[in-house]
Amino acid sequence: QVQLQESGPGLVKPSQTLSLTCTVSGGPISSGFYWSWIRQPAGKGLEWIGRLYITGSTNYNPSLKSRLTISLDTSNNQFSLELTSVTAADTAMYYCARSTGGGGYEYWGPGTLVTVSS
Amino acid sequence: QSVLTQPPSVSGAPGQRVTISCTGSNSNIGAGFDVHWYQQLPGTVPKLLISTSGNGPSGVPDRFSASRSGTSASLAITGLRAEDEADYYCQSYDRSLSGSMFGGGTKLTVL
Image (cartoon, rainbow over all chains, first blue to last red; front, side, top):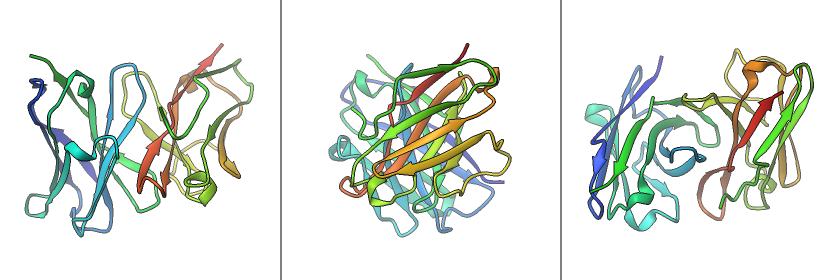
């Protein structure tokens, strides 16, 4: 059974960089799936952040693209998110998830809450 | 603002049928991309419920069904139960954005 687990700081200061890692277990990250980040501010809807394929190719939400990097670490079966110049608007629950190319997100991590505050 | 538009809320009495719409455009639903529906119970991780292609996880009750027409998609729930009270999200791929997106979500209240 595939499992995903997010990890990273729960508190980030404004203007700094938010860095999160998703560790995948139950199967190799180098299999033919898309690995994604999704976030949800408290009491609000889901926002797709971006995704990564095993080739290293990425697709990003245009509204975040200038601040965003998603990368793959096959040796540790992990993928990561870096979001620079954060503001309070980036405060949210961050989820990592797996999908096929046109498929839905069948596997999700439990989520990690990131608060941007000084 | 979401590219996929859902009603903020719907409601129905136990046993009734409700539908939740998801309106997109010719660059997403209208382009033929699959539409996926998620159920998020309070305080939990979203769960993939069903897709318009018919693909989806096993174990989902057949009270839930998904359909599409033109640039819109719908989730129908029959025989409404108290445990169906949750937030529901649609999701699809958008060709012009080269990425995925979610609808704004619909809160289902079981009266």
